[in-house]
Each structure stands twice: as structure tokens, then as C-alpha cells.
Length: 362
Image (cartoon, rainbow, N blue to C red; front, side, top):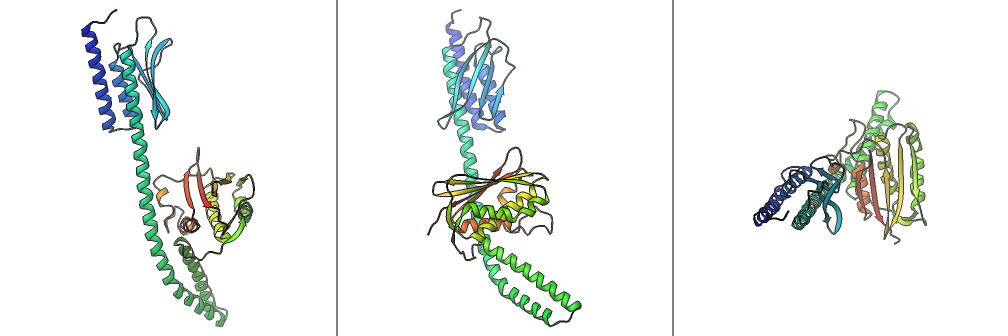
């Protein structure tokens, strides 16, 4: 059936209205991504000449919308959705293939324009998420820098009185006969030693501890660290795999400090893992450096906790089971070696810590 001038004008008006409504829905975006894409599909469906029979379908990365179940035997129009130069999905309109329905060339042009709008919409979302992450990282870096300065000052101020307490307590213990005084002095000595270890960790966090760089074979250092934690693995019946390929990686690091890093992350992984769990340690070579990933299948780290894990004294462990200095120490050591540390979720559960460090031979 030939279209009349009035039919053509009516269809063009529907198409223009569709583009306006799609643009408005994308710009407003006051709900979830799925809700906005569902709204776009509904608008597109109404723009087609046989809107009552039209079925709109949209797929964009992890998002999928279908306005009605698809029957057998359909004809379709499709337009690809491109995001940052890569094809990331499509938008389609379907009709039942009964010979009476057909698509217009103008409808294909409309669908192409909607696909462009959908791609721009998704690009904007990605950029917004990157901007949020950037600002969050900047704020976190500033906070950690300030905390580093504060903790360095506290550590220096505490060192001298702690040394005096430890020295005099040991003197009292050595001069006291066996009895309550000797026991009390021993408790003071133990508490002072524990406090001194906390001060040392604070100095690690603030990068105030001197480094003793030496050339090490990275695989050997990791293997030795894992072996030293053998009893911790055995206690929870946890198995592990250490993956490393290629030529041995040799670099100059403070082996004691790097061992401390591995200890802290592995102990956290063991703590989070279920009995009979498995932990994977992987060593990668990369341009100008190397990376170490420690993967567990434990409880994972909630999103609201991740920004705080490197802050000193922050811990999710029960009272008395942790000082909250482990990962702050790790952050300080990695930072002082010119590297970085990041964390992401494992699938389906657990956590992956990734350490990246440059190879230094001087």
C-alpha cells in the first residue's frame, strides 16, 4: 500500500518526537541504567508505523532490555551501538513475519540515530565513573599523606619515652626477686616491646624506616615467605599455588620489608578464607617491572570498606585480633619502593591484591 502525504508526515513527526524523547530520557537519567534503556526501547517502539506489533530489543554490555517475548518467525531492523570506538551492543526492532509488516528506510535511519545516542549515553556514564574514581583516589592520597605526616610525628615522639620505659622495666625485673614485682615488671617489658612494634609499623606507614636495598631473586623471596607461613596454612587446611614463569626476576629491594608485605597480605587472605580454601600467588613480569597477585576465595571486602583499608588503625577484625596497621604498613613499604598496590573483587567470591613494583638494579 502506497503511503499518502499525510501518512508520511505523521511518520516523520513520530520519528522526530522519538528522537526528542530519547534525548530527554538520556539527559535526565534519573533512575538506573536499565530503567533508562527500557524507557528508550519503549519510545523507539512507539515511533514505528506498526507500533502495536513492534518489539524493541536492546543489549549494551551487561544491560539487556526486551519489550515483549519474541515469537517464532520475525523480521528485524538492527543498528550497532558503538562505545569509544568499540562495538558494545545493538538495538533491534522486530515484527512478526506475516508478510503484512515492513520497515521503512527512515526507520532504519531513526534506529541508527538512537544507537548513537545510546552509545554517547554509555560513554558519559563511563567517564563519570572514571571521574568519581579519580577524585576518590586523589582524596585518599591526600588523606594518607596527612596521616603519614601525623604518624611520623607520633612515632618519633613515642620512641624516646618507650625506650626509657623498657630500659627501667628491664632494670627493675633484673633487680627484683621472684614475686609480684618481677611479674609486674615482665608485663611492663612485654607491653613496651609490643608498643615499640606498633611504633615501628607507624614508621613503615609514614616511610620513615630506612631501607637496606639488596639484589634478590623475587621467586625465591616469595617462596621463602610462603614457606614461613606453612603452619598458618596448615591450621585452616588451606592449600596454595605459586605461579611464576619465564626467566628469574632479579631486583634491588629491602627483602625484610617486602617479606613483611607478603606476610600481611597472605595472613589477611588466610584469615578471610574458609577452611580447606585455596590461595593463589602469581608473579608476573611486565614492562620495566613486575607484579605480584594474591588471590583468595574468602569473604571479600565490601565496597564501602575498600577506601579505608590502607588507613592506620582501621580494621574489620574483632577487638584484640588486629591493630589495623597491617595494610597501612604494606602501603607505606610499597610506596617507598616506588610501586603501587590495588585491590579488586575475585569471582565468585574473595579478593585479589595486586602489587606492582619497578625493577631496580642500582
